[in-house]
Image (cartoon, rainbow, N blue to C red):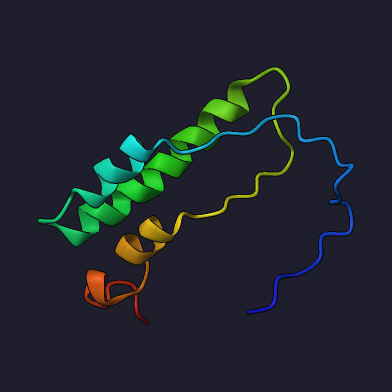
Length: 88
């Protein structure tokens, strides 16, 4: 997979805010085993809420870059664990 170069992003770029996911938050999503759709929705809502909170800050970001933890990708993305949910 090729990741596009962001010309404005460098080691000198000022990162004005950041948020991380706590292990307990990730585990809460992964613990939803009875309904794949609910698990996916919980993963999406976790990120959505973090971005919403960051947007309320006086120094809110113009750009948000999210790196999805492998466990969220594995359990909420297109994989065997989601039984193909989201496959076109």
